[in-house]
Length: 286
Ligand code: NAI
Image 1 (cartoon, rainbow, N blue to C red):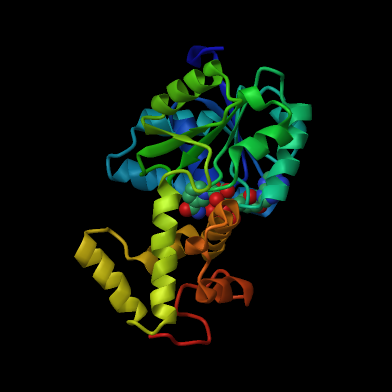
Image 2: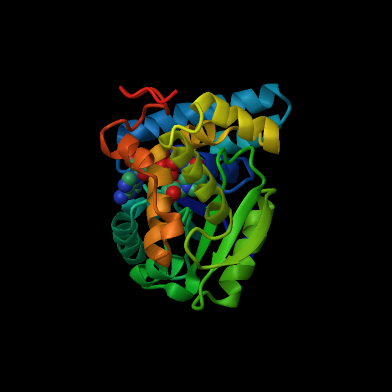
């Protein structure tokens, strides 16, 4: 199968990443099915995608032809059986290994034999997910960045089992979405999160130690290192639960104590502050 034969892309999980991936694939001319177990989430995704396209259209960053292509090619599904004709499946459900394994196991039963499987996981082992899918040679990591319509990079992650054809088709596919590629091996956090997440985690340690206020830590990193967002602003944007999951994967996957998640980050997520922004809990760290 070559890129020209790739017609249908199925995206699993209609959260912030799945919505963005579906949007970019549909505006690039693919027939896209966005699947989620939650109908309300699909409705939210639909309105979010249309709003995002309208904004990009207004700013001249999206053509009318691409928006029309999306309107004609994007479908929203809650039945897994509708995904049987997928040429490529991109999984973007919650960062939970057991849940991802379960969905790949189910997808393998439904999707045609030639379909390629990809995971957008931020950190979980692509090899273990590939094994759960029962089609390891057709399995690859495609790690899109957030927000997908604006960010140019996709990390392409291979395992020892990924075959050359899957890699070539995946590279052509990513390029057809007007994204840049970096290749990396299957190692906890790959490249981007192995370097980025310890920085965010360190910001939580600094706050936990009372080193500075959250505002000043964000300001220091923005102005002092020329990053567009401070670490807490970025952590809020990514989602604190996702940040903690990635740190746990780095810590458990390497057995290296330098990756232990900060207690403060754990407290935010595990004590029910999920969905709140850093500093909006009952504790005041500033
Ligand atoms: P999210 O929490 O916004 O969305 C997850 C979606 O998956 C929800 O809509 C949920 O209903 C759905 N879902 C859960 N179980 C499902 C199942 N069994 N079948 C179908 N749908 C199911 O999560 P987000 O932030 O979009 O992350 C998704 C994946 O992308 C994670 O693996 C994450 O690590 C990765 N990622 C996240 C980035 C970020 O900045 N948030 C950046 C790059 C990758």
